[in-house]
Amino acid sequence: VFGQPRFTSDLGRLFTMGVLCSGFLLLLVLMPLLFMQGQTVARVPVELPKDARGHVIVCLYDAVIAALITRLVQYHQPYVLLIPDVDEALRLYDLGLNVVVGELDQAETFERLQAAQAALVVMTATDATNTNVVFTLREVAANVPVIATATHAMAGHMLGLAGCSHVLYLGRMLGAALARRIDIGGGMPHVIGRFERLLIAEAAAAHTPLAGTTLTDNRLRECADLSVIGVWERGRFEIAGSETAISPETVLVLAGTPEQLRQYNAWIGAADTTSAPVIILGGGRVGLAIASVLAKRNIAHCIVEQRPELMQASSPYIIGNAEEEEVLRTAGIMEAPAVVTTTHDDDLNVYLTLLCRHLRPDMQIISRAALERNVATLHRAGADFVMSYASLGANTIWNYLMHNDVLMVTEGLNVFQVPLPAHLAGKTIEEAISQSTAGCHVVAVEAEGHMQINPEPSLPLPSQAEVILIGTAKAEQALLQAWT
Image 1 (spheres, rainbow, N blue to C red):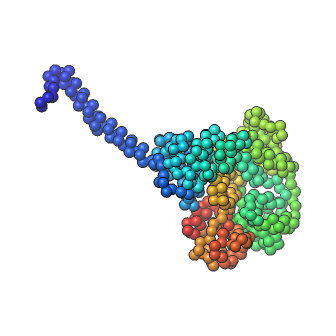
Image 2: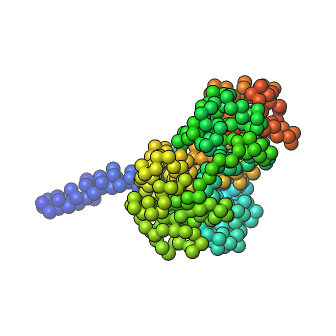
Image 3: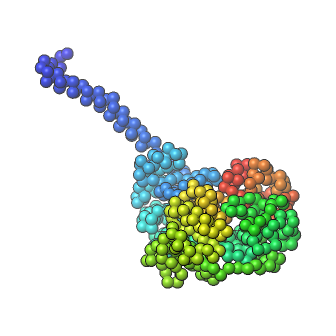
């Protein structure tokens, strides 16, 4: 070919072969690879349409955000997940999440996400990162509601100065929620949540006239005008029915007004309580929050912690490894009415739960879970009640977004409020709760400013009513699908 050098030596031919091979490598391998990588990166969007509004912006991805996204999808609330790392964004995008790539500390990122028109911005990162992001966001969206987590009061104060609308102290909140589940006997109901005048409470059946009866036999609704909406049996929840049997191990979930709970107290009478201390395994933020709540209720308690620097003089404690049986015996596990495992390591919580159940088959065990997938394992290990940091945070953020109340009774069991669909108006509760939604129980019906608590199944549902129900997460999902 004219103009093409010809090599006649072996070295020249070797050079020609090298040029040809490198050309083929570049043409057939490297160029497609670079093209595919560029196409892959381009799959993840970097902005939202100009007319986007009413969406939720969640920053970074962790267990709390994962649980929140599940609830946002469940209620058809638009959201976008902001991730700064491209590889992480691609991984989450391939999982089906609505991901956008962008730097958290650049105001242009939030401009591209139409933050000024968003319904809420959520941050659950470190205190320093959250503060920086709030400052950055406020450059372009001065009025959008912002909710962020904080580990201590000073961090919360700094977030407030930066422009955060609402600060969540999830460690403190989880500790208070776990403390509400502790039962030291007496048979009296303790309130675990409220919807206006409607109180949700729990009461142990042990050492009361209810043990050994059914709901029909004991005439609880007639005598105390109180509804038993469900029962706990060793960590397993069941919707209450007329033939539901009540054993000494049963914990009743009650719904009623303050007056109705007082009637229950008078009807049931007082049973014996114990003065033995409740054992708290772990002296971190959650453990100390539990101790603070118990101290206010004048309930004896003892913290078991390995690190003495975490302990406060105001709380009784023992320095030692809770994995050792001798340490637990020294803390008083053989007499304690309840034990709470509060570490952030689910493996350790499972081990401690199993050990405590082995030592005391009859005691109440309450456990914290870091990840939702370990809740069932903790129940199998012997925990009566389990709550996760992620679910509590997600429910709290959801309540703030919707100006609503979703009460997490325990992990996977919620009391929630749903507007009655128009096509169900006039039907009775029994007709509205079909077989596909049988896992839910109507606790109250609110219409025209009036709340009817513990309605009869034959009650016709008025139009534009708000229905308050209790059910598992699966049952809640089934009801939302059936009612929408």
